[in-house]
Length: 469
Image (tube, rainbow, N blue to C red; front, side, top):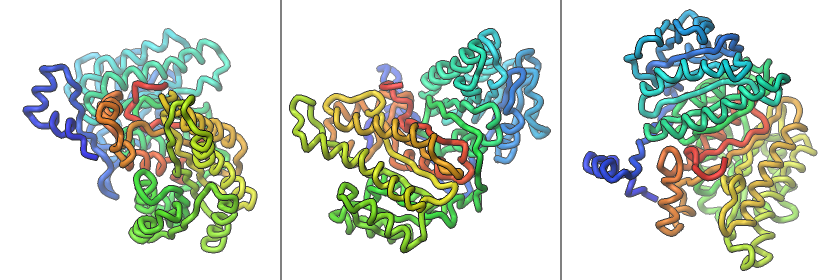
């Protein structure tokens, strides 16, 4: 559904009126538009607290882009910044910068106590006002869970509050801020995640913390332009909305997609499958034989799967006291139980190949709860718990992660009452709703063969919603 307010405030007259009345004035977000688009452009400034462990890898990744790389200099707490690589140009932060930055990237892995947090201020204070529209802030730290010293754990956990607050300050520019917490030996696993967070693919992802582990087994992408070439993906609920966008995006990245939905949606499902040169599979995932049907289809036609995306979901909203039992049962069956049973069948039959990816679609309702959605929120919160637990059991390079969409412009949200719809759109740092492609791009990042260190995460695709954490 069209966001009429958004269109109005992006006219010169509307922008003036919004500013004079103190109303939100959301910025048009730049999204991924072409296959060969650089993941970042413009001026990128990189900095490092003393003793940083990822500055070289960050410099190498950004140097491979179309950006002009600069490194901070002449500030004592940032003395290691010169290690950003030979392509980085020194920038004196003791003088006020005149450049506009498309991204500010900071290696905070060397911070060991609260006093060293001053490095954050020294790097961002003189530069954050120079962040361009649709800019990116990215901080890399150490996973606090792996820090033995309490002072170091406290300092690294502090990065979360810092990044979430920065995201709320820069959101009016259409800019985002995110945090990567890496395991001490996982710097080699940063590349795909750095590329995602600095790129237009993450336009509606802000205020998020992602943990990167050291992958025991990984794989290289066949092609940067088509990282999923020769991969086979199953996408449930693929006939429309977010599921259709996921199928489109994975196919764009080279995957052969099995598009699954209920038999009643077969006509639209075949349209989607035909467009992306995939296969349509009509199946009600709540039936007793659904897991075997899906597994048999994947085995007979493709010999297995590389990617499983559990997108199918339903809402049956009622307050708890007024909710009939079948509303509760159906929401749990579709949104949670079916995912568990399908995965169990595919994994027990060894149909998910090495370096395979499982992605589950949760919801911000599963994190924050929602009025009249006890059944839906229960199921979507369960998805997060399931992902966290199964991530510890998967082997041979397989990973599982979740996305938790916020307000996404779909037919479902278009049917909401006007006041609720407007509140959903504006109650986030970017002051606008997301698009199905925003969820799909996040899933495509998870599915990339080089994202082997991304496991057990739940990333909100919500423009940094003011609801939840």
